[in-house]
Length: 429
Ligand code: SDX
Image (cartoon, rainbow, N blue to C red):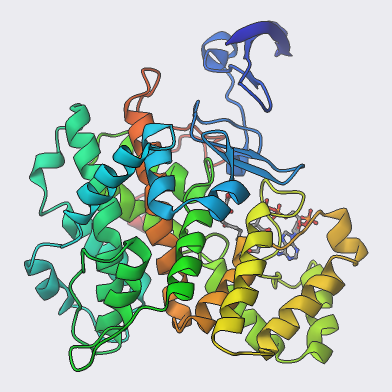
């Protein structure tokens, strides 16, 4: 939808910028013709003011702390739905009818196993390899097993690739975990729901029966919903950019996993728990707050701040509630790390520096404590984030491929290197 347009005076030229309005949220000034008309590029490191695409999937209002998936608020989806229902919503755009939900669950379950040779692929990793490194390698390797997803122009091929990824990523994640602890892989059990199946693949052993705790399964399913998609964040933009060249969808998701791993992004849940452990006691909090405010100290409070949310991350509220439910279920009355986290949050939210910079806890602040209470090692926290975000990544990848405006992503630059100069022979250097 286009309405008025803006003009820009650049280098003595008046450039016309058509304005496009969205359904809700900021309009955009279309600068796609700016270089042709002005000979100049725009400059926006980190894309803080740049919309890379049109999308109908997720909307975030950072000032109001709002997160919508296809128009549905995240708290309503987390309270009332399941993760697979959210996957259906992200992929198809509407909540499923009971028949559609049952069919979608059946189709996902028929793809939960991975090629048997994948288990041999894991043998190449050291046992102490970080599970995120194993995920990048094994998901990338999946593109070697599915040559029938190279014709991504076919909508059926795109959907089968989407189903395979949503179905197989938990299996690979559980295999990565089992491999690092030296236990045998556990096959998927199609009698279990998505999150129960994942817990079973992680915690069951061949020598005794394992019963999934329904409270844990429900909590994990809600955690997956909270992490499913989040607009054009760094890893989703990575998947879109990789996909814009026509790359195999499994390879694109492997690229997303690699980007998510960073501590400034999905690795923050692992980093936040390590930070709480480093703080060690409530008495030490002021020292770390001071470090976070010190410009000369690279230390940041992991789990605080966000590129878009300048208000409370709506997911963090639900994550905190889930954290208390899980701690109660495992009988942890007072986890010292939770005490530190709650006190850190209280102090930070009353500190002038954090108020002025609008730094609130984000989803990663409480997820680490919750996942630790569920028995996951710290190194698996971002893996779980990747399991959930695969749904968003593949929905965004599909939307990008189906966007008639899409073309290969190829940003330009401001060149500040040396001007043209001649080669210097060795004896003249
Ligand atoms: C995720 O994009 C998404 O949607 C991501 C995500 C998703 O679902 O995909 O929501 C998941 O990645 C959540 C964020 C997880 N990361 C962390 O918790 C790591 C700690 N947070 C920071 O690294 C930082 O807040 C970012 C990376 C999250 C946001 O970085 P921005 O938007 O580039 O903000 P900034 O670095 O420009 O910070 C603005 C100011 C700076 O001070 P000034 O230069 O203005 O003086 O705030 C300060 C920063 O120094 N600041 C912090 C801080 N975060 C920002 N100071 C102390 N502690 C912090 N955590």
